[in-house]
Image (cartoon, rainbow, N blue to C red; front, side, top):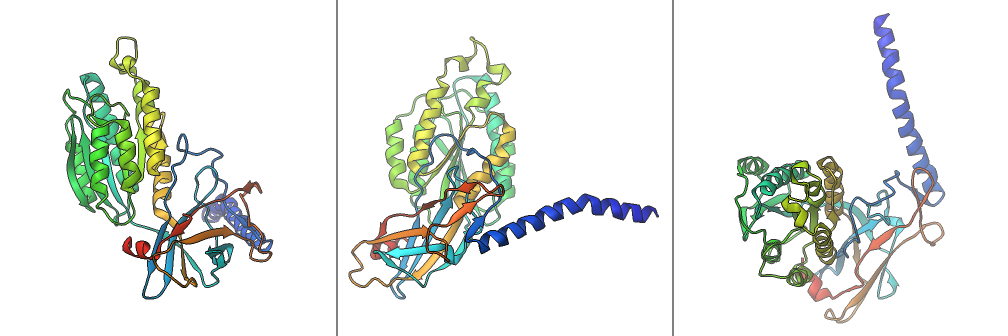
Length: 368
């Protein structure tokens, strides 16, 4: 009898969850039949702060076959990836001509991350707190990276110092982070460090990014903020900023008019990090507590790794050195009109398709 009661209890426990799954599956099927895409509800606000940087669509061209491969983002207005789109939801046009042979897949690409850690400053009390927060934030990031992802770690104080080159040895990273000693008194030359790392990333192939964990304070760099922005524009590497400004500013040991942080312009530092992230095509995050980092890293990795991959055989003839205009639309395959996307509550979601306007076949082939 006890066994029967336990079985009934478990059934009562799991039935609501199973019912919700069944309801959602039925809703998706019903929505698809009505020419809609229904997706799970997401937060009504983005996790990143400020404006989303313009992110690049990858376009590759195979001259031997004439095949074009595009890797692109489809997002809602808050920057969340929109799932569940199918091949017939995408209409691809090249030079105004519909490409009817397109295939669509979803890619979860491995990435090469340059993890840049602030590890210096003028004030021992701030350095001790900063080292603890930076180390913890870095270890949390390592927990969400995949075994196929490559990571290089840099720290900066007076200058940027590489600690590891790109490797997939995650145990090595953890040991390294645990072994780091609190920094001594130094400068915190953020801009010099970013210029050095972004220049290094220009030679890295594949999906890549810089993840900066920093207060955003720069004390004595030779490079200016404009130098960083100029380098970011040509490095083709998004910078995802994890600003510790809010956490440090509200740390009890660092508050008060006599504390060194009282002299920092935290708002200016945040604006600088936002501008760098936006210019590079990355995102700026400013957690109030370390508890928020888990959701932030999920958002960061989804934005960096997940793409729709569209492949089609180009019908455009002619000079391979001439630009070809590409346009992608989301459509209702039954009507040919715009695709309606709704969340679990039936609220309309406005999708943003991230795709560049044109490509030159010879250049797109060289970038492969």
